[in-house]
Length: 96
Image (cartoon, rainbow, N blue to C red):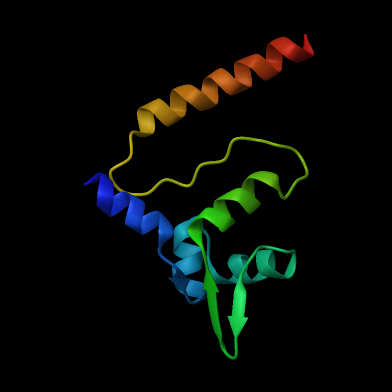
């Protein structure tokens, strides 16, 4: 199973629908984000994107390093939630 999820993270997303589905957005939002600098490769009328590049862009496009995780099948979302909560607690303690 770990091999399948590793392969899935390295596969290329083809088309606005696949890219939008990966991001949990509509194709129109994905296209708008591309116009704002989201890393998508255009080849004629076709578009491609690498999931790792999209995840990184979503996390850094605001100019601040924030943990962003786009989930996929077979992931431990409980551990991801705990990590996110820990991050935000540290941010609140840091500001206080």
